[in-house]
Amino acid sequence: MHRSPTPTVVLVHGANHDGWCWTPVLERLDRAGVRARTVDLPLDSYDADTRAVRDAVADARVHGPVVLVAHSYGGLPVSAGGHAADRLVFVAARMPLPGRSPAALTPEWNHPGFRESWSVRADGAVTLTAAAREVLYSGSPPALAESAARRWRPMWSRVPEQPLADPAWCTVPSLYVVCLGDRTVRVEAQRACAERAEERVALDCDHSPFFSAPDELTEVLVRQAASVGSDHDRTDRADAGTTRSTVPGW
Image (cartoon, rainbow, N blue to C red):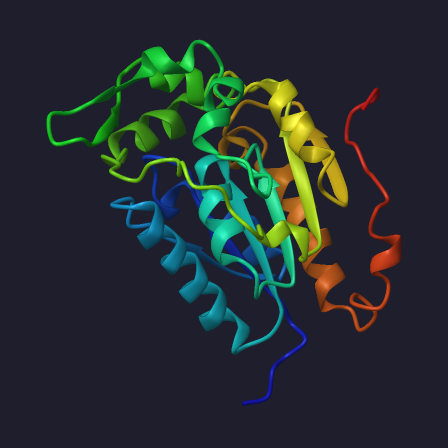
């Protein structure tokens, strides 16, 4: 089948959410003429989540290049299953180091207040408490935060103990989006991840920029889609290390 140069943006949500959370960004990408789709992770195991990402990329690549976007926990299955994508975008997302246990790094990752906003059920599922609304969506429109909270899902997937030997970002060009007002993930942990990416952007928003900064986040994704859609994307990777910031003092 002929592959179009028109890229597809594939959006992967984080813990306890579903693809609905990307709706404000989907609407804006549609208006910008960028093809996009979401992935609903099973959230019943990390391996199943990784397979869902791998399958979504394979399906999208039938039509052309793929920009694979991960939010928060979604960075783990994207790193494990996103090797066939043409570009990766990590949004306040896990970006695991090769040979390092992601689970061992969790204490350095989560904001201290986030631990108080989730609990573990008797069946092992992690669920969010009412306190999570303020932690996740502190700068988001209240109506969107309320709608998202009604859709929270129980989660059996766990951050893996086993290190990843070859995270996708080691071979696929990547951009990292740091959320400066994040109360879920430590900003300094995001900055450390951003240093591993070839490009980096900082947004003045909470942990959920698909609600709190959809225009700015969509602009980032439109630029990434235009980049992979160009004929010279692969040959110009030597220039991909150029950094960008939307705020002074990166």
